[in-house]
Image (cartoon, rainbow over all chains, first blue to last red):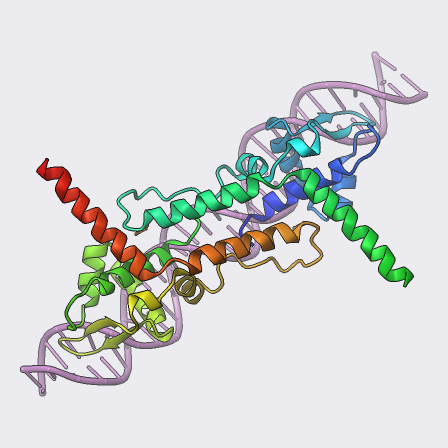
Length: 138
Length: 138
DNA sequence: ATAAACTTGATTAAATTAGTCATCAATATT
DNA sequence: AATATTGATGACTAATTTAATCAAGTTTAT
Ligand code: FES
Ligand code: FES
């Protein structure tokens, strides 16, 4: 995979929060369980997500996490940049003879990732789920 | 940088060989020096390049390396796939909820890389070199 | 023969990624 | 107020990947 597992976890966590219909916070334990993310690792990821303004967190009993923005205002490039600091950064050696290829590639990737929103992921997941159901009912 | 340093070295080495006008093999030492690649590491890279059919190597005194194909028959995707085994491979966890994004991204990258040929890199380098000269002569 | 190359595999070092754990802070409930 | 529950944070560790180095071997021009 091109993107780190940590980012993948972050996106999974956001999806879990994004698929939450009512406004009651979802707890870390539940996110970890349903999206298969190592619990203690998720702590740090949620921390990053909060610091970057993607989620709001609440402590104490009945605490948990909620999305801070609408899913169609969150794109993957933002998430990845905030979670792992610059996707596909350029190398330091600027004297490099074919730097331009890596630059063009970076731009291509950034364009693609910034065009995919959390809402797209959620729509697709919903769609997949319903087509699964119709498969079974045949 | 998205691509590993080893790959970058491999491309540099190919560029050195590709910019060779006459048919006398270029030696490892020279490649390492002019393209700034750690000598012993280059051994392995040249080995990979040979195994993958990009270059031919000759031992003994007056030995060295030559490109095995024309630069316009060598694209970056081939090189990268052979050097580091599959650029941007998909993760093993197939159950993943947003796999499709990574797949689309992988395809995008593969398309881009397979459209860039060694000859493009050489042309660009040539071009850069001459524009450098004209800058100085102003 | 001999020296100059390349070839190969074992080994190591450095960096990054992934993850744990312990401690602290906040808060709802009683 | 006391307590239990949950998140927050930072120090630490483990695992993996990447980037090398080194030494012993093979080929070949002279
Ligand atoms: S040597 Fe890295 S971009 Fe050219
Ligand atoms: S969890 Fe990795 S692609 Fe969805």
